[in-house]
Length: 338
Ligand SMILES: CC(C)(COP(=O)(O)OP(=O)(O)OC[C@H]1O[C@@H](n2cnc3c(N)ncnc32)[C@H](O)[C@@H]1OP(=O)(O)O)[C@@H](O)C(=O)NCCC(=O)NCCS
Image (cartoon, rainbow, N blue to C red):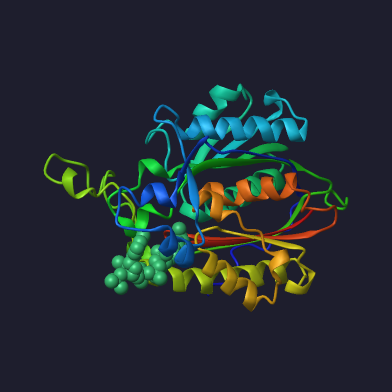
């Protein structure tokens, strides 16, 4: 495990959360009518019961914009107050312009600088850390950090190994500079990040980019869909998420015993349980919503954070542990004092 990638303790606070999930629900039973699977297998192997699917004419930026509006309303900030928009996504509207630029246009955040981050399921926590750096250096005071995905557009609906796992959605937070000495609510205490490109082939969308453009010859083999070595990914996910969580806690001067709620990436209930057991955290301190949404990659953590917030599970002063793992491989963890 490489050393934590930063040691900075900047005073950035989450002042509002928001999320948007598409209306259409696709259940395990419905999926089992189109691919050789069943509710029993999916539920016992993953914990997923259903997922949301965006409308055909709904782009990632549409979901991201709605989540952003809700986060801004919760934070009490106007679009003009937003100085930075970072969208974490592996399903951008287009290769360029960035999805963040489309969000800027849709929400009217005319004063923002906008770009995307590609770090798969760790993308939101990567984006949070980048936004913290902007705030820490004094360039910006108020930022929108968004995780949004239309993974249904990247799924091979004939591959039962992967199509049962993923779903669509978007989550957002507004973060704002706080006085470093002040006890501001929602303060991000620490973030650690890591990557291992040597394992890039275990989870990827190999086609559709410059490496393997889609051609009439290769289109049938669907290279522009998600390919994953599930078992190998599973093992690395448990190890890296655990290490990252422990490092983020250590960096914040805390231990797992201080954690009020862990919000882990929602890829597989067995991964989450394994991590919670190793951190000695009881079920009531572990947030899970993957039964409803499956794995929504970069959207997962901000959607879960918003749902936990709305459900009253985040109390002032609580220590919230966020931890994610995804393609790259990438991983990250943040500790937030609510
Ligand atoms: C994908 C995952 C759920 C598969 O579970 P698993 O227990 O490892 O299952 P395996 O891949 O070993 O497959 C076991 C069997 O189930 C079958 N299977 C796979 N998907 C199936 C499905 N949807 N329905 C029914 N059977 C299925 C396989 O074909 C295999 O059959 P075989 O033994 O006859 O070959 C699991 O590996 C996983 O969650 N991986 C990590 C995902 C992750 O962490 N992602 C994070 C980054 S996004």
